[in-house]
Length: 417
Ligand code: PMP
Image: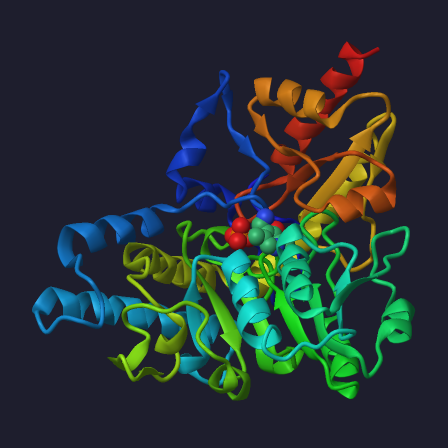
């Protein structure tokens, strides 16, 4: 099966066969089988254009950025800044100076916690997070709560993994300073209604911090339409390199925030009488950044935009529907996360079989899936399971990949009787 069938008129289906050829690693055999990679939520594979851009950077342009007058430094700076502009366009931020280079989502959220929240929070203030958050959108808030006397409170989720918006409303008060929420849950696939949440948060004077790690590769993102205050995402989830990502923040906040890390490139002047800070975005970018990574990420943005995010979202949706139906044919399989608003993540358990055993056995068939708590232990607790099996879907997956997973799961079932 090459393409997603039955796309609505106007949205051309992705040519999966062609896309697969863009990814050198997908040509690999694993344990004697064609690799079926269903772990893109952990990290995506990289297309040749990204790998080539990184190689080209090191072979032709490598230099430190912003500091040199020589040709190579100017070229490296141009590549680095061009990716910042592509990131701005990717999330439709109003200003390129609001796009802060970070290592990834984790660093971005820690930056907001330490630089926005730490100077502002007082004992008794509240930070709301959802029960479905990844640990990287829980623990940074717990750290800042310890530092300030603020309290972290979870917003409940329904049995299908949908955020309980009544519980959000019940918990919002004049004490709420921050609402931290994932755009898409990495363990359930739930898509959260960010625009609604941001509006409700604003009504009590709280900011909304969005973990976009799982949304970025699946949806067109428009931070202005979402109405949030900060949006974080990682390059390696959008087919770019590891160690590079972005934090978008509203200028009014970023201007008012102190630097988080000190060092080279983030100052205006330094003396022993005191130092002054560079304007945005440099104020938050101390030290030598991942310039080679930025070169690759620029190519990744081009690649994703070339395919079209609306087509990607459509592909995702259709494959999710197919995958859901096929998995439910497996005897004893329980899906964890069945919200009507979902993207390409299939989390499940099989009665009587530990997820790690399933992961190990299907790996023998060349199918790469993830098992464990997915850095979302409160979700596991909510659903009363220690771990799940997670298959995550992306542009190079098709129905044949799902069929291979289901076939392998049937084998697991037979093995365990
Ligand atoms: N949030 C979510 C929802 C994620 O899936 C991940 C990655 N698993 C992260 C945050 C952390 O991203 P990173 O490790 O790239 O900082």
